[in-house]
Image 1 (cartoon, one colour):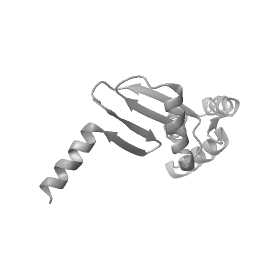
Image 2 (cartoon, helix red, strand yellow):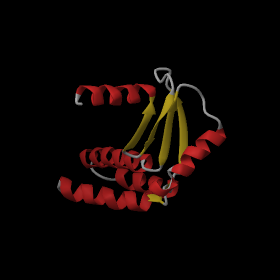
Image 3 (cartoon, one colour):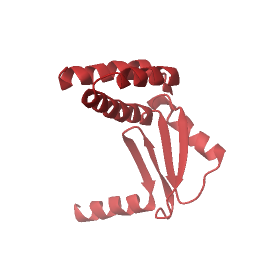
Image 4 (tube, helix red, strand yellow):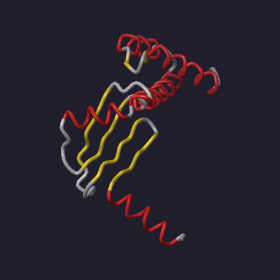
Length: 132
């Protein structure tokens, strides 16, 4: 059995071929899964798990998630998307309703988070007061 380092390298190559310009290449993914199924069970389970995690991480880099206290209009979402276009290709945009956000928004693209909520601003003010 190949060691884990070799298998992880294989997963990276699979990811490179599975996602082009932020778009999932479904035929490639299905072909890889078909090939993985032919392997020994332990190796197949490990590869499928690593592949699934890596696909999720890679796709999240191209998914803009906007949290707000109420549903935003398409124009508002497009405006936010336009402001972040220099950060990378955004393929999917989601608006999640978070009733805990009294006002403001929280935006996530990949592993970058912008928090412009009232709660965040209050915490920043609190930190500035405490730390002078």
